[in-house]
Image (cartoon, rainbow, N blue to C red; front, side, top):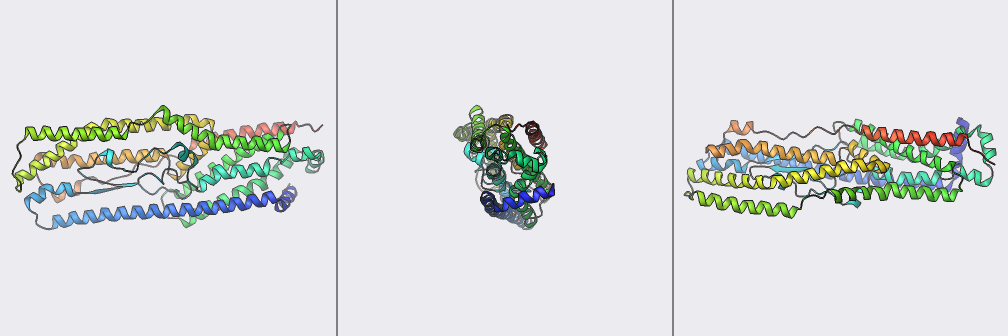
Length: 451
């Protein structure tokens, strides 16, 4: 068996198609690694800047407490408190960027903050962008690698049948099973090895992030199963009584359908079925609530004299009351937005059963910690933290008391949500699909007739 594999390996070294495939996968992996490293560097720098801003804000508050304050300054101090909110660095975002490239990962919580205005760059993403993704190592594995496998394997057996040498080749190999195994392993290694080497380099050169090694194992397993599924499909195509050219056309058509058409179509259907509420509606509701709350407060309360403690307390209570009214007005719209996004994710997960490429891409994003569910969990935890932070400061405003050092120290600090579990469902799906199609192809090869 090893002799057969060695013979096939030597033939691949002289095959111009194999050489081109190796060059393409190598260059694509290098470009993907460079893009991943650039994104990782930018994300690290952004989080470091956010941490520095948080430390600066806390130092400023500490200075305020360390010095004697005017009574009015002590009353207004809650308005100057800013607490940082930052998502942890995804463990493998340099391999699969997912939503990391266009979702906010850091913001500031304070007494004026609202869930609707925490993240200014949050977006659902266009169907084309979500389906295609950025040019990272996951893109190379999902989009480019299957196409290279098709180029290497579309004629792995039908070419011998077309030339009339199939019977001789099978006799020399000792059967179709040995022949296919000898021809499959070198071709799979040629495509998969550069991907795994690139993943290993990212793992070694990247930062020490909790769960990074486990994420890399999950990521690599998904890639292996996904490409094994494609190779099973290629072998099945070689059992059909067609020539190499129609086999190549059929496989490329299947590749285009599974990797390009269906993922974009699935995302578009989900967004059409569950469109999010208009952001303009949210802005209009917030503005209307602010105007109504301001008018109601000013009508019900006399304007206090400025510059004394009573005036500061009244001003603080006024701001808190208006903010609470605005928050109550936009909360249903925010909840509807998150609910629609969650329904979109559920619809996409269901429809993705039609597209192994979409399932594999989502599984890679989950492994990397850059999936939509992780982004939604972060936004929800940030919104919950804002409410938890504002509650004691609002109570101080209602009581008309200044915040103390002990009260400031007791304010909650942000804690990120737990990471998403490994994509076991996707792994089982890919393993079952590749095994089923591979066994079907093996069964057809065992009963193949060459007359």
